[in-house]
Length: 88
Image 1 (spheres, rainbow, N blue to C red):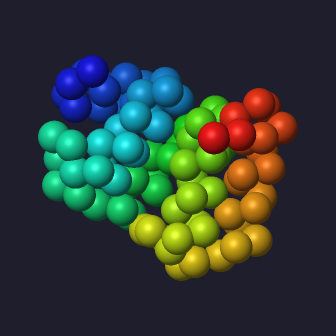
Image 2: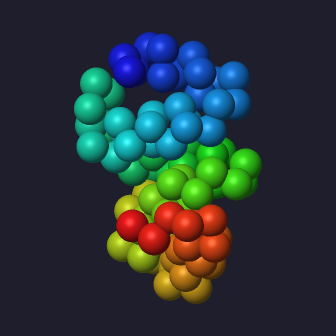
Image 3: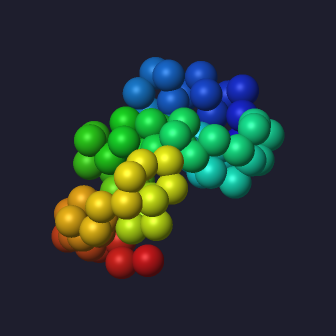
């Protein structure tokens, strides 16, 4: 999915697109690498209950990418994802 269409879907609240756009920012794919922007999109999808975004957000908290490192938050988001079957 192109960044343009991904952003359009993300801005309409589509959680898979929000998580994908977060990954684009995390990897610098089609946009400038920006971990804070990645976290923003992961959070938008995570609060909607999107398991993949919860897992990705957990990784950000675990490693301190775009947010202050917080292992308690990492575990919280990993657990939310795992409870839905995402155990990546």
